[in-house]
Amino acid sequence: MATDNRPPAIALMGPTASGKSALALEWAQRLDGEIVSVDSALVYRGLDIGAAKPSGEEQALVPHHLIDVREPWQPYSAAEFAADARAALDGIAARGRLPILAGGTGLYFQALLKGLSPMPEADAGIRAEIAARAEELGWPALHAELARVDPDAAKKIKPTDPQRIQRALEVFRLSGKPISEWQRESVRERFPFRVLKLVLAPRDRAVLHQRIGKRFDAMLEAGFLDEVRRLRELPALRQHPAAFDLPAIRAVGYRQAWAHLDGASDAAEFRDRAISATRQLAKRQLTWLRGEMDARWFDPQTGHDALQQALEMFLAKPL
Picture 1 (cartoon, rainbow, N blue to C red):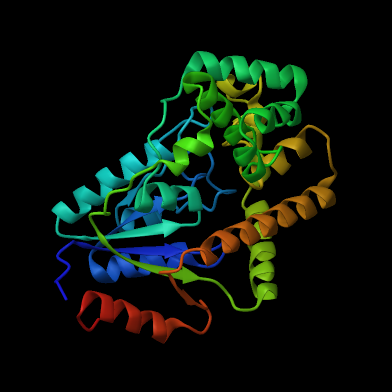
Picture 2: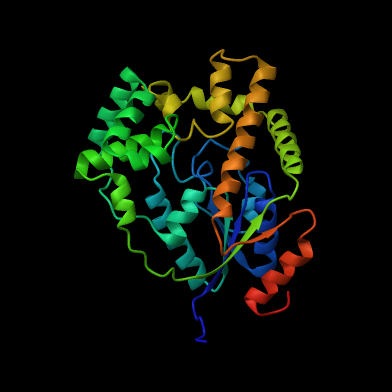
């Protein structure tokens, strides 16, 4: 068997609240590593408490990448993430350090490790037209339009997912070809890093639910609602015609907090809705992770020794 000379990288994957960030920090300190965040909320400045962003002290312990790279009103695509993450990985390897990818955004992992289909770049004018139509007609109506021009894409995209509906309609408008066809025609190169994929996921779903609830209550105590109030006062968000539809504001927890501050729920209802939405996110993440056939699964409560063994075997040295 030919030797694989690609530089190594670790991918710590898993549902929200499974302990990925803490383990990534521990390993980065032990292994002379640097952390590359694979989280679609951590890219936004100002989304700190509700996104469980590593603290300034934690970020000072080891270099972190792809945190705070956009304002909450600025777009950031999976393709942009893949390009930025690849540059970060190349830089880490060039410094002789170990890249540790840590996060739970499946689309970002997909874009980086497997590639995305080449397709038309974003067009600000067309996006604005689609957003204006959505404000007038509602996103379900635009999803119905998508179902007419690209039924395959519409089956995979929920009527409540404005970002993906907008992108699919945009691609069709620009190219005349459904986005599902672009995706089927993709040709992917071999990823230039040798990646160990590790999934952290409690075997007992009730344990994960308990962790989610406990973490959200800690966020509330740390001032999460005040954080969202500060976001709402930012001039760019106050003046935005559809701030509630921005990916940053639709992040789990932030969407429910924004609606709560609009008067849509009382404090108890807000907490229940946010925790429920986070559990649903975890369920979606687990569903995606089950499709990663080359990933190895570990229970964060009981799998410490097995994780250590997997890491030593991959790096071919005792730690």
